[in-house]
Image (cartoon, helix red, strand yellow):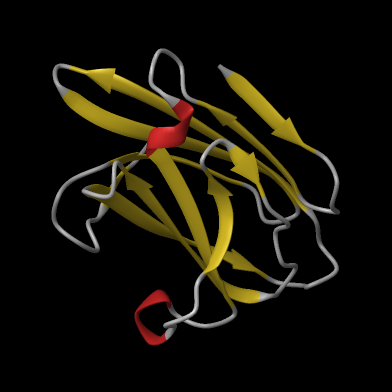
Length: 127
């Protein structure tokens, strides 16, 4: 299942492949490091999309699967006026769950992350 949101300046597309879309949640801590923010912004939950804040600096993303597995990454934006297109693609390989991100815009980024039970896991380079 592929979903797309274009109701705001930033765009997001979530591709869950054969996985159930309601099992994923995506949160954002815009302008404040994830570990310092007790009030994360919901971006995607229960198959629904929410507005992505447009903040410069450290934008920490948290991805949660079934409330158990998770990963996070930082997207550094140099200007709050810059908008981006975010694509999240979830897939399984050898019983491991991955999230490939593809961010298009002035501060483009492309990477793949492993969702694990431990908090604050590191990422795997997509190149």
